[in-house]
Every structure is written in C-alpha cells, then in structure tokens.
View (tube, helix red, strand yellow):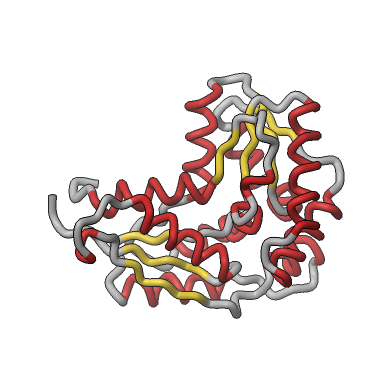
Length: 234
C-alpha cells in the first residue's frame, strides 16, 4: 500500500463539526507512527455565507462562489479528493464539483447508500437535520432514488433552535433534550432507521433514542475518507 493520499476538507460549517471529523479520522486509522495517518488539508472557513440565511430565511448570500473557491484552493494545495462535513452545504455540491478535477466524497449520497444497504427498498428513514435539508429535499430525493421514504420531526422551529444553540454555546443540555425528543418521536412514528444528518447533531449523537437503529453521516464520511486515502487503487 502506498502513502495515504491527502484529503481536502471544506470546513468551518461549523468549526466544531470540522474538528469532530478530524478526531474521528484520527481514531479510525490504526497507526504505529505519524506517517500512518491521513494527510488533511483543512480550510476552516468560518466566513462561508450562512446556509440557513440563504435557504430558510431567503435573505442571505448564496455560498456557491465561496465553496467553489475553497475547492480550488484545496485542489491546488495537493488534495486528491474533497470532503465537507456539513450536510446542508451539499445542496451546493455542484458549485464544488464544477470547479475541480478531483472527486467530492459526497456525504449525502454516501449516507443514502448506507441507509439502502441497511433497509432495502420500502424502508422508512427518520431524518434529524436542519430544516434547510427538508426544504431542499436534499436527503429526501437521494433516499427516494433508492426506494426509501422519510419521516421528519414535527417541529422545524425546535430543530433549528437546537442547531443554533450548539453553534452559539456548543453541545448543551437544551440541545440534547430537543434532539432526544425529536428522535423518540420519530421512533414512535414508525421510522425503521434514523439518520443524524446535521453535523451539529453529530456532536450530541448520544442523545438519539437508544432503541433506534441510527446512521451518523459524519461516520459515513469518515469511512469514505479512510477508504479513499488508504486505497491507492480508488
């Protein structure tokens, strides 16, 4: 096996989620030396225009140009592939892939593949994500392409407030309580599997209903990065 291939991370959405991905990647590699770990080129750009403002409030700047510029910088710095630990930002994936010649390890599509492997056609996935993901049907369309239906928490405002709390205060009890309540409600509504599809929620993933089968999109992305970087034949 050759040297690990460098991965470019479009980060800062939010900063803690980017650090979480890095930590998971460190844990995922069985290392004997520093050189065994995956080289990461991280653009921790906290100035990416708000996806919430653009998609939910309808008043914000389209972040496409910023994301495209980040992708170009990372490719020029030597990244062999790109990854982005923000589910909502995948709505703008075309702005990234149109600007570079290297692949984007698309977290949304990879997570939809994982759900289909777990459930098969006809399964129902409960989504724990930003209301922006619901508005754009980002995951809904990906899952429908694989024969899966979706369920959402009943109250978008509560979900959005929990995300904003984590962005402003970090993981906190109020956000944990909100995520737990939403997850339990999805279980009661008949979800066969739940998808943690907001990287802020990945920071408090232990709050998901313990009786539920769950997939965390950050975990899916972590495995995809490991597979790409360490497999020189990819």
